[in-house]
Amino acid sequence: MEQKYYQKEIETMPLEEMRKLQSEKLVKQVKHVYENVPYYKNLMDEKGVKPEDIQSIDDLHKLPFLTKADLRDAYPYGLLAKPLEDCVRIQSTSGTTGRRVVAFYTQHDIDLWEDCCARAITAVGGTNKDVCQVAYGYGLFTGGPGLNGGSHKVGCLTLPMSSGNTERQIQFMMDLQASIICCTPSYAAYIGETLKEMGYKPEDIPLKAGIFGAEPWTEEMRQGIEKTLGIKAYDIYGLTETTGPGVAFECSEQTGMHINEDHFFAEIIDPATGEVLPEGSKGELVFTSLDKEAFPLLRYRTRDICVLSRKKCSCGRTLIKMAKPMGRTDDMLIIRGVNVFPSQIETVLLNQGYEPNYQIVVDRVSNNDTFEVNVEMTAEKFTDKVSEILAMEKVLADAMKTMLGINPKVHLMAPKSITRSEGKAVRVIDKRKLI
Image (cartoon, rainbow, N blue to C red; front, top):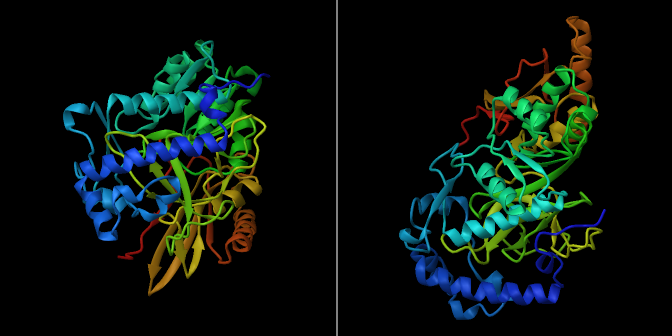
């Protein structure tokens, strides 16, 4: 199959040309931010950095970082770099703790964002002959609006389903012969599970590809979704703070996500010291928006842990790749002094033949952490014999101890007893009062 690109000149641009383009954009962006965002001007002044100190992308390390705490402190208008009359939309994070993060967009910002999503759809084989079912949430959440706009740019017939109402999702999928689906991986797994229960086999399902993101998922989960739906499952990455989905996307090679580095410059830093690490190092991902007008973030700390690579890709794109995030510095649980990522639990479950329907419950009793994992039995593994359940719980607990270094209490539960997610899955319940 001939590899298709949405904007071939940019997606296959030689590194020297890309660095020149990035440097030109960065110099303009730093001046724009310094002159229009007092909050960031103060951060630069405190660090003793002026716009004229930034002559190329090589000077980026001189600039101060931004964090989610800064975004909350500056809520709602403190990081706005354009007059409100130039802005046409806001998007917002889910706001599970503290103030929401609100991002602003000019029409130009939206056009660039939709181009990024169009690149992602084209990379999975999308054309104007495809029917693209967008089952991410719409509204303040960026998933639905971003992929919806990208689908329009590619010319797909777009089904703006939003999340939920799985029966209707399946009806439209089958009746309109949807060929691409965009949603969270946990919802894709749920749709696949429902289709299987309805008697559909993978070959009966019209889908050829899925674009899944907005929450962590493992390689094992990808393989499960591909098998159930009979598709190729592709990763997409983004943050509301920088624009939304489409910051990076996976190609046919499926070995990491190409960053749209004409719009977003990526760095990997040591999360403890802030030191920039060389290519190939594992650390915290930091993004700079090179040409966003209304809400341009410079050196924004994502808290995602990953690796960057410029290894040549078989798809022909020269855009740098980021590995699937290996966890988050803020989502990481420290239990009895051990770092625990939910993705590690998921890997164990999938390797042991369980579905990724689980919840981690952490509490503190008499100054000691308790660590429990509730896991659904699959229909194949289900039993009501206590001795068999205890034996299976021990096998899982032992496997988790091998992976994590600490021993959880595993509770096996009946199939479908853990609430299914139609948006982002709630995997962790931390009852400790740590603040």
